[in-house]
Length: 432
Image 1 (cartoon, rainbow, N blue to C red):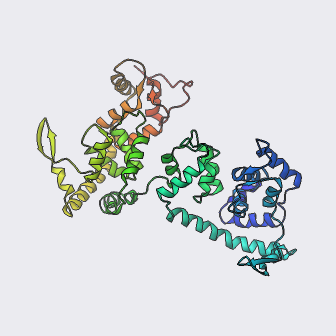
Image 2 (cartoon, rainbow, N blue to C red):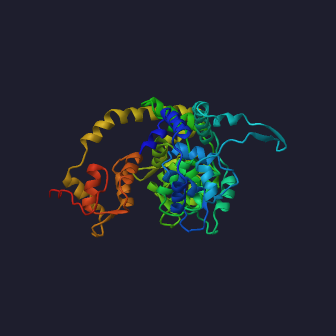
Image 3 (cartoon, rainbow, N blue to C red):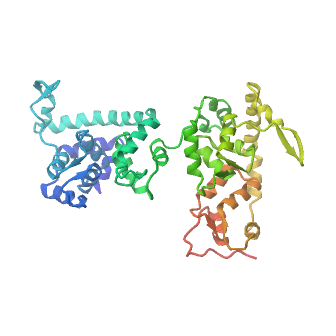
C-alpha cells in the first residue's frame, strides 16, 4: 500500500503534501462506498471514529487521516455523507473570512486554490506546519498531564450507558479530548480485550508513571546514583491512586498482595526495578493488605528496626540507610557494590548455576505438592524469589507466560526459550 510512505518520518511530510495537492482525490462513488461500509447501523451518520476508518478505506495514510480529522469542527461529533465528503475532499477556500465574527477580510489562504502555484504553496505550508504540529503533539503528550478530576469528567461524559466502564465505541471520543492522535486511538482499540474501568483508562492515557530512578543507563554508578539521589525528587503518590492500583493488582480480590503482586504494584506507582528489588528485600511481611501497605508507604518504605538472624531478634544494620544524609551515602555505597557484583561475579554465577532438565523437573515436582500436574505462576514466582532470582528476572518469566497455571512441559519450555508456545505443540521430553 503506497500510502504507508506518507507515515515515514521527514519523507512522509513531502509525499503526503504532494499527494494531497495533486492526485489523491477520491471519487464521490468511492467516498459513498467507504461511508456505507462504516455506517454499520444504516443511520445515515458516522461518528469521528467512523470518519477516521472511512478515510483509511479511501487509502489515506495515518498522517493524512490526522490532518483531515484536525480540520473538522471541534463540536462536530457525527457527519452525514455530505459532511464526510467535505472532510475527505476539502472544498476551495472562501474568498473572505470574518475577523471577530463581524468584519469580512480577504482570506490569504485562497491562494492555495490557484492552479500550479497552489500545490507548490500547499507543499511548502505542509512541510513547515507538519513538523511544528508533530512537535507540539509530542510536547503536549510529554508535558500535559491531565488531572484526575479532568479525566473523571471526560470518562463520565463518555460513559453513555453509565455502567462505570468504557467500551470500544465510547473510548475514542474520550481519548480525543485528551489530545491522543487517531493512530494512537486506533492502536488502543485494537489492543482492547475488555471494557476499561476508570483506573485502566487513566493507565492508558498516562502510561506507566515516570520515576527519575529509571535512569539506569550507566553501568553500576548510574543505577546507584539514580535510585538514591534522583528518586528523592519523585512526586508523592496520592492515597486514592494507591488504592486504585492496589485493587487493580489484586486479581484474586482477597484484599492482600504477596511479594510478586507488591512488586507489580510498585511498578504501577513508578518505582524502578532497582528500587523494587531493594523494597521487596525489606518488605515487612510475606503478604500485605492495603492498610499495611499504606503504613509502609507513609513510613517512606523504610526498613524494620529489628531483624531475625537464625531465630534471634537483633538490630537491623540496614536501618542506617534510612537516616538523613548519611543514609544516602551508605545506600549509595551498598548499591554500587551490589551492582558491581551483578555485572561481574553475579553474571558468572547465574550462568554456571543454570539447571539441567532433570533439575528443572525436580524443581517443578517439589512445587506441585498436590500432584495436580499444574502449578500456579504465583507459586513459581515465590520459589524463584527464594532461590535468589531478582524481581526483574521474575517479572520477565511471568511476562513470557500468558497463563496463570503451567504444566511441566510448559514450565520446561518457559525456562528454555522464555515463552509458552501453542499447547498442542509438544516440546522434546525431558530426560529422566
